[in-house]
Image (tube, rainbow, N blue to C red; front, side, top):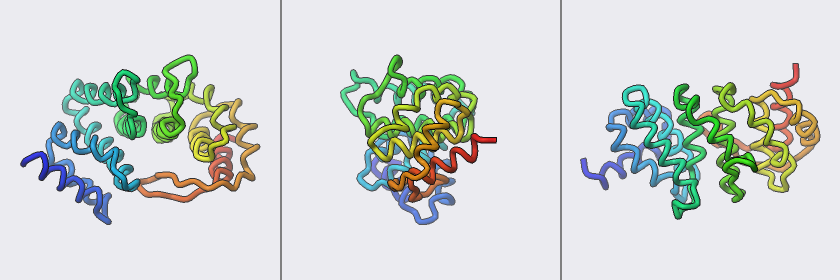
Length: 225
């Protein structure tokens, strides 16, 4: 199958109203062939297509890792490179894809979870662009809600985001906090309970509308005995 036809077919899968069922079709495509089209869809103008591309990338790379771990590492390094200043790009979708992949594969989470955390650590590989910070927080949240043991130290770096003027950063940081036990974040979450700013967040393969206060309350219900 030619590259253009493959890209067209994968787009049809991402655009399918029954995406969860159609996702199985992606497995029929050799993983190495599916990855390049999925990378391009991380930049798609339709937010739902972008998020579904993140999901599909996670599914494809996690399955590849079970067959050929080194090939999956190459893809992880490519995502990391996209977030490097020297890449010449911005890295849209890369931290989200990293989080999705690691949520689906324990071995890759063990190897690369600390790198995802480093993107919110000012002494690490801190990303200053707020739109990328949103992506990192979502990736951390996706991973933390499945494998919190690999990003437990992220709680040390969430405080500035919980105080951010950007409602998405506050909300996403609250969502991450719900999966990570941290005494530092609890009082900050309590301060957000009445925050009525609304955000759209991709959870369980669908877009959901939540307020920051709702996300903070959910986080506290998870972390407080």
